[in-house]
Image (cartoon, rainbow, N blue to C red):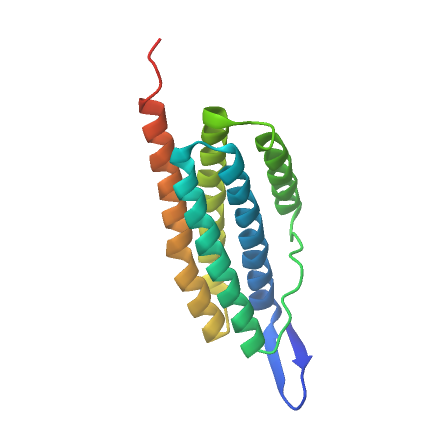
Length: 171
């Protein structure tokens, strides 16, 4: 299935799967930027460097995504979960963000990092599927360049979480 978008005198078609992949990455970028901004307010100094890098990386990625959409003369639609499992995951993430908003300091850090590790691992797995399925070469390149950054975010979250665990007092 293909979505056609017409502009002045140009007609471009993009496969629905490619457009859905871009919509999902855009949604992820917005969620991660929001979560990182929360971390800048609620987290400790140790988390703020990580959160700043997430804001920077996801903002940059989203600008690149929108530039790609403009080049392809398509509008990135709102992300719509494709399965009940995706719908449940989105609800879980919304619930998690509400819980995070009530935490501060070290408690926030632990919950935030665990969430970021899991969320970024999930996104990296989805990107692998989208990369394989992508039919547009530019979309495939964009997704391929995005994946290692997402994997690095997951690794950094896990490393920070492990470092925090070793600094806890032993009982």
